[in-house]
Length: 264
Image 1 (cartoon, rainbow, N blue to C red):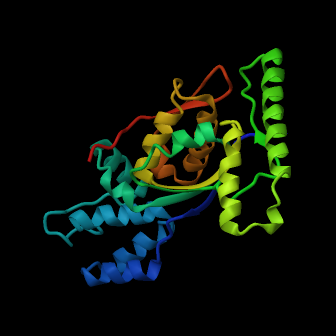
Image 2: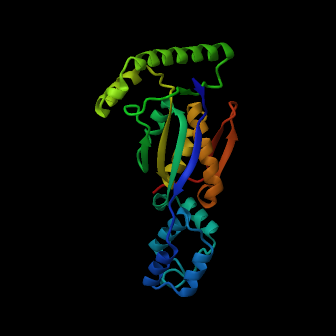
Image 3: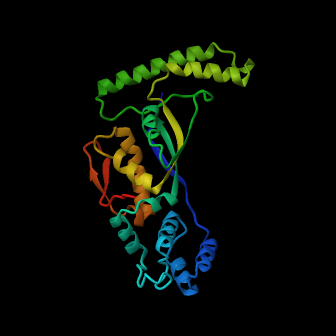
């Protein structure tokens, strides 16, 4: 058994094309000056796209473009504060983030995959993958006697798995036959066996999942995962996650709560 802990790495995000964004603004009549001002003060990540999408609803890229709009919020921080206060959540769905969530138990992954709306999931398949080692996280809340008992149970399970594995002539089997036997053998492995997945979510969904899965009532391992996600989001997307506040919990994790919640 190899001890592991959950690791979260942001591997991708929505990126805008500045020239295409300029072309879109020009096409609806936004002045060159307003285009320059907008592009100079925004990045190229999902925050820029979300603001761009929100402004097209009112054509609020500059005063006068829409005759009903005589002043606008130039500062993106002010713009996002207003959006969040109003609860305009739908525009947050334009920006996506992509995560490698590694060394989490299947207990944890079963919880993560329950969030389906606004997400995409690809997970390591134990129908095809024969684990060369059993990676496992023993929860910190167990005492030493309980930890030893759990480690022994995992090691006993691994020995049984290896005994079965050694009895199979793998090099003589077709891939289909290997898949069938690999799938059969995995049934004796513990549910706490570590797995890897790629998880993508839009920012509206992500705000909700961070709040739900860092709640004090959430399972500790999933809090460990979404604590890491929350810290990265607050660092990388301050306009979108700047309203989150953290509360330290007794087990060393944190609970993150937004001050503002989207409605539509």
